[in-house]
Length: 112
Image 1: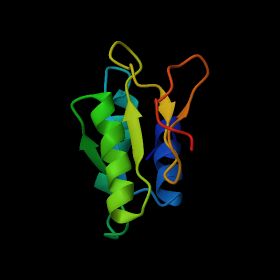
Image 2: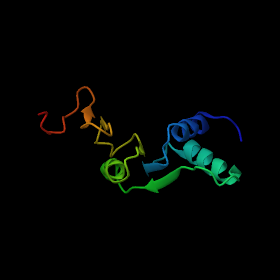
Image 3: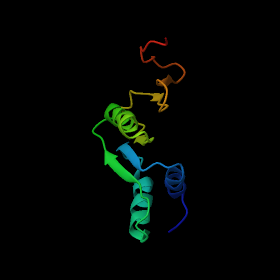
């Protein structure tokens, strides 16, 4: 298996303890999908693997990752496409409220 940016990214997710990745993939993800399929075909040890769960939209993927953490106590990753439809632009910290990016609308949650 060739070393690519996508294969390194997937390795980093696994090394960070991520097992579930909620995705809303687009046309900019073929390399990521190829790396994912290549690593699953090569895997013979039955060890830890990433599970991609397809979400119908970006907000659903983010909510699923947050719910996964709340239910299991383990972080999950979210991968969304970068074209039309990416209206939700904030970073989730598992133990904190969403932290907004600069120039984005806040979550409206109380900071008390």
